[in-house]
Length: 68
Image 1: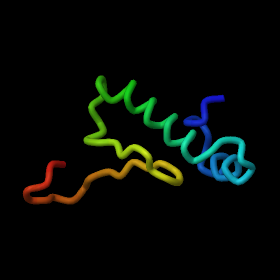
Image 2: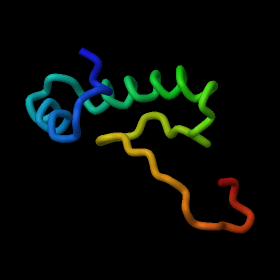
Image 3: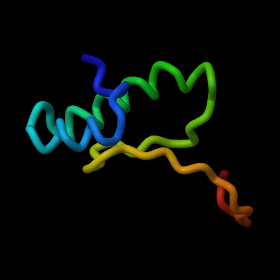
């Protein structure tokens, strides 16, 4: 099962049922990002060892002195 293909509801339920851990989930997304990001260049950085459900945040705010 590719846990990166689950909906949010399915992911929450699977975490509650202990079908996989938060670490497993974050590792799966980190691996997926490592594969697709060199081609798409959509992630500025990826924070490893995060807890909870991964989320990508779109930068829509102009910032001075901060790489976006």
